[in-house]
Amino acid sequence: MYYVLCNRIACHWCDTLELAMMREHKRRQYSLKFYYQQFLRITDAQKAIGGLFNPFILFSLAWSLIMLCLTIYFVTQPTSSLAQPITEQQIRSASFRRLLTQRVWLNLGWSTIQISIALLHICTICATGTITNEKTRKILTAVLTIIPDSNAELDRFQVGAESGF
Image (tube, rainbow, N blue to C red):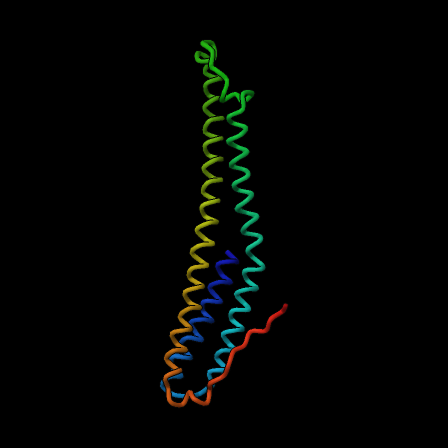
């Protein structure tokens, strides 16, 4: 939930920046460089959110998949009561049938929970990431609405990448 909440806040910042830039096309208030600096701050916040939550989500997903694999492994072992052949006496015993049914339902339920959690993690990561990326890309549209403006000539600046090598 915190991951989704933090990404919603970042999306709100992107929406606010986009709206401010769209209003800028009508009436010049700030320079394009100012908006670029705000954009860099938002992307830095998004990187921090990813750096904080991505390891936790990856660990949770890995844990769910490991538990599912272990459940399947132990259920299919020859020493498992689910894999042993049922004798005629065991079929007639109501308590053994009840115990066997409980074990089957427990294993099916546990496996279903693990699969659901793993799918929920994957869907959360994909949906939240897609929404955040699309909100960030919309800022480019707002930038392109400012650039053709004749007053934007004063705002031209160069963005250079420094090489760390």
